[in-house]
Image (cartoon, rainbow, N blue to C red; front, top):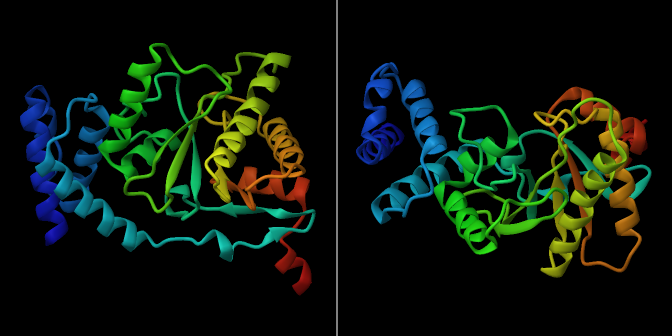
Length: 270
């Protein structure tokens, strides 16, 4: 019941800010799942306006409870691959991963996805972290004064995520055959995230499959680029102790396992 009360409070507060969406909100059924979907939708479309303390108290209580219900995956529990002692592959929801930092495949505004309940990782991370993440990204972009370039990285807090930080990077969008610039920018995404994580003394970083979704980078070549960039970086003296390739789709899991080999634990059991 507490969850439903929190959701109702948050929907009311958001609709008070955005009354133009009241007719649309009234089309949502009153069951708990539909009202939660409405809440995520309203959070997704809310501009980065100043945040109300009352809203944040209720939002944080709800997101914390949902985070505990989803469960936290500890990076230390993930077996490394047979080919590299610092690299693991994990298929699952990156918003459950308690790494020092997770990587968000962002767009050039760095403000998250404004499409209600979109299935992209940008939407998932912002939705689980809470509206503070959009607010921090907005302040970073105001100071920067221009869209985020491809291949760079920015660091923010993780807020209600189990990860301490989020690394935001904009990958290349592929339109037609993959170009040399596409490859260089994708490799730069991985290097920039690792550089920034190391600058902050972080030890665990989890990468999503950058640019392979809405940006249409071919899965196989994207994975090869990612593995090459990461293994080269780990050959240096760095604070990074573990890199996790987080894959959501089975096609990506298969590609990464073909490149990196099975988990050492699985190999030992064979």
